[in-house]
Length: 112
Image (cartoon, rainbow, N blue to C red; front, side):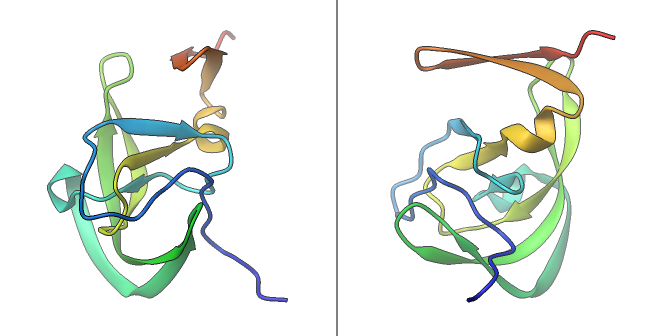
């Protein structure tokens, strides 16, 4: 059985790009299709990510800024074939509370 290092449940691969980010409870990492979203970027040896309907290549990694609170910098992977950006619930839950209501995800600093 092949072990999957990178996974996300809702990513689709398409030439049509969606500027929104989706919060994915099954994503192992944060992903962005836009090279211009990265504050820092480093090319990496080709890796693959398993999405909802296909496997796609990852070509880089670096830091992106998420519009949460005053903005937070997070490590993400560059997956240019994704049709939208993916935010990992599991990674955000380390520092934030996430509340789902219908099709909206509310994200706030975790209570201490």
